[in-house]
Image (cartoon, rainbow, N blue to C red; front, side, top):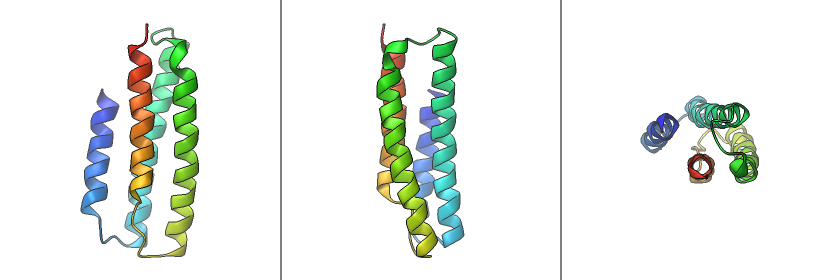
Length: 108
């Protein structure tokens, strides 16, 4: 639940940074990536400790792979255009990862 609150904070930051410089875009993208990576790591750690069911691993892995592709594209675009803001696709993909984790933890 803590990670969902963190992503909410990140999403608010993204919305507030509509007219960001290239450096601010990297900070925003980096924040979304950090929260997503931490969430995925914590989930896989909880699976390894048998605190979360293993059945959700494929869905979480697929969502995270999708996030990585979208994130990589966003970073490429940001480095080429200083007026690029963090695209909604990145935050949406990060949200999908967090939703997959939440759903996976609820499995029995």
